[in-house]
Length: 173
Ligand code: AR6
Image (cartoon, rainbow, N blue to C red):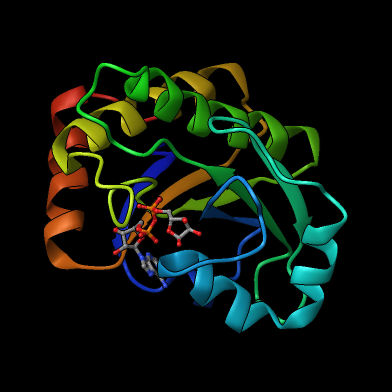
């Protein structure tokens, strides 16, 4: 069975066990998907985030979903792209791994990701899509309890890129 899926849509609308937030290290909100998640979840999400005291790039922390249809939000600060010589690729891989480890620890079976770091943080999309698919495929092998992981792409170009990365990886979960 194929446990990795790519869809186009708005991650704030997904009724899954956990959605991932492409956050920043403060975990106190921002623009892009982070802003959309906080707006849809309501102020209680920010109140819980304040108790977490931030998060390092490449790591992840979990909260409730509050007014979202998702049960949990897993917050992960992706790397800012500075040209590739600052460990950006490994940090991005670490975001996907950390989120799925945390999801599994918390009994989440369905997890939706946005395209981490490819917006405001400017990580090249094609490179990011290959890293994401490889990391997800690897984690799914380790965690049979994870039923389905989706990339929820906001626009057509992003979806096409992840579709290609999945096809080329040969990974079908
Ligand atoms: N659903 C799914 N994907 C979305 C949505 C949505 N509702 N909205 C945007 N995207 P970005 P980053 C896509 O910039 O590059 C924030 O200020 C978007 O089209 O949200 O990791 C944080 O606080 C793009 O494909 O995240 C950080 O400071 C992808 O989500 C910083 O931005 C990621 O774009 C993080 O930057």
